[in-house]
Structure formats: C-alpha cells, structure tokens
Image (cartoon, rainbow over all chains, first blue to last red; front, side):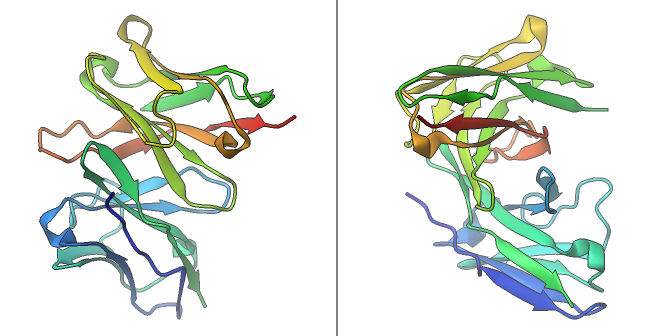
Length: 106
Length: 123
C-alpha cells in the first residue's frame, strides 16, 4: 500500500516561511491535498490538487509537488498557523494520509 | 452554509455493534461522494470509507473491510456507518466528510468536515 511520510514536527519563527513536506513514491504524478487541524478542532482543507487554495485560505499558503515530494509552504507565518498538517492522496481505491507534521510558530 | 453533524458515538463492549449517522445540510447531498475518517485522540487521521453519490460504489480501508458498512439515504440527506465486531483498535473520533466531487480521476478528498462523534470500545 502507498505510504506518505511527513516530519513529526517543524518550528518556524513568527513572520518567517515554513515548508512542510510530504514524501511518497512518485508523488508528483498524483493529486495531493493538505489539511490543517488546530487543537480541538476538525481538520480544514487548506490546499487541493497540489497547488490550489480553497476559498477563504490566505494567499500566504501555497503548494507544489514534484518527484517524490509535495510541499505546503506557509509564508509570513502567524501564531494562528500553529497546528497539525496532514497530506493526503487517493491511491488504489483508498485514501491515504501522511502521519502529520506539528507546526510550531515561535 | 455546508453543515455535517455526526451522531451515534457511544461506549460499547468489544465484539459489539454501532451505527453512526451524519446529517448533511447546506448543499445538494446527492451530488457528492461522502467519507468517514477517524482519529485516535492525539494521533493522525485514518481514512475509513467512501461512498459514491448514489451509493453504488463503496470503498473501505483494509482495517475495517468486512466489519464496517457505509451507506447513505439521499432522501434524508444522511450518511451512515454500520460498525460490527468492534475492537479496542476502533476507539476513535469518527468524522463525516463531504468529498469535493471534482470530475477528476483518482482525486477523492475531503472538502468539508463535521465535528466528529466519539466511539469508545472497552470492556
């Protein structure tokens, strides 16, 4: 079965750029989606099909995917961006989630 | 406004059964596939199941295949998850989620999520 690998944690200074990665075999050929989950809340879609932002998601959020890595980039990080981030794709009749990255904004 | 409200989560003994429900509103329910996703508190997300807009196609995670059944009643704008032969490993918060419904191959993802209903399996 397909596996997605995310770093357990990432820290970023307030106002700086955070790059969250999601690794998978030839992930660049698949559609990758990203979810933000703040403590005590349900997940929220923040990026779909690699690089598309849903309505209401700030332009500070951007996405890319190539080769074996997909990346969610958060520019000018804010305290409110502190959350868990999960990547996801559909493969072989199942949805697959990465293990999630806990983003800390210092 | 799209709303998904899950219900039916309770404490149940190992080997028991449970039926979760999800009431949908704010969108044309029968236009969209729907998912169930679960999460052990403090852990990651685990996809459970997907059903097509008309219920004709269903998909399951290996961990629940043969024990769980997803279904929907489009007349009632409702999604269900019948859970049988429950074990402690099924203990989690269960989310109902609306698929994006894009006409793109191999592109199922969760555009909107409910708040979840907790299931505890314990003796």
